[in-house]
Image 1: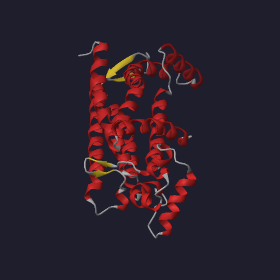
Image 2 (image 1 turned 135 degrees about the vertical axis):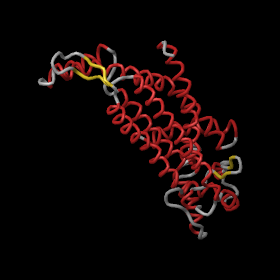
Image 3 (image 1 turned 120 degrees about the vertical axis):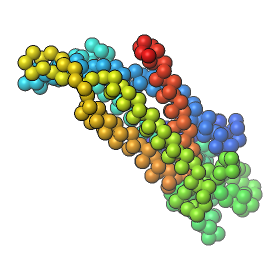
Image 4 (image 1 turned 180 degrees about the vertical axis):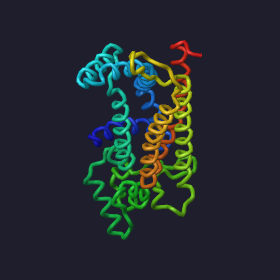
Amino acid sequence: MFEFFASIFGYVLAFLYNLVNNYGFAIILFTVIIKLLLLPLSIKQQKTMKKSAKMQEKMKVIQFKYKNDPEKMNQEIMNLYKNEKMSPFSGCLTAIIQFLLLLSIFYLVRCPITYMEKLASEDINKYVGQLQEEGKEVSKAYPEIDLIREYQWLKEKNPEDEKVEKLNLQMNFLGLDLSKIPQQNMTDYTVYIIPVLYILSSFISIRMTTTMQQKQMQKKKETEIDGETGEVIEKEGENEMDAVMQTNKMMSWMMPIMSISIAFVAPLGLALYWLISNLLMILERIVLEKVIKQEDGEE
C-alpha cells in the first residue's frame, strides 16, 4: 500500500523536479501542495476539537444519569454525537493520514529512482552490480542514493546507456547534499542543519499546541455533577487541566520523536519535507485559530 502511494507521489515530485530542476525546491513545492490538499481536513479537525470541548458538559450529565446502566449510557452518548453531527472516531482519520504520509514519503525519498524516474528494478540492480564489482560500497538500505552519488562514474562506465541519465538528480540544496544520511556522515556537521531546524520547529509546534490548550482549559471550568440533584456544578478545573495537559503533552511528543529517529537514518530530503511541513503547520494553526475564533464570535 505504501509503495502505491509512494508511486503516485513520485509522479508529482518528478513533475515539480522537472519544473525547478532541483530536488530540494521540488520537495518544498511538494510539501505545500500536500498541505493545501489536507487543508479542509485540518479546518474540520480544528473545529471538531473546539466542538468536542463544548460537549464535555453534556457528556458528564449523561454519565451521571446513567452511571448504573452502562449500555444506556453508551447509547445516549452515541445519540449525543449523532445530534451534534460528530463522530467519536473523527480524530483517528487525521492520525491514519499522517502515518500513511510518513511511510509513503519515506519510501519515496529512499527510492527516488524507482518512484520518481520509474527506472526498472533490473536496471537498478545492474548499476548496483557494477558498483559492487568495482569495490565501491553500496548501502543495503539506500542503494539508489548511492547510484545518484556515483552518477558520473556510471555514465562513463555505460556511455551508450541513456537510462543512466535517470540517475542524474540535482540533490544540492543551498549548499546541502540532500542525498546524505546523518548516520553515515556523522563527522559532517552539515548533515545536522536540517534535522536540528526540524527539532526546533517541533518544539515551537508543541509549545503552541500546549499554550492553546491551556488557554481553552483556563476559560473552561471543570464540570461536576451534584450527587443528589444531578445538576451541573461549576468548579475550578485544575485537576482536569493537569490530566488533559499531561496526556496531550505525551501525544504531542510521540510523532516528533519517531520522526527524528527516522530522520537520523534517512536521506536529508525526508528531514527537509518534515521541516517545511512543520513550518506550514505552525502558520496554518495560527491562521485557523484566528479564523475559527472569529466565526464563533470569540474575542
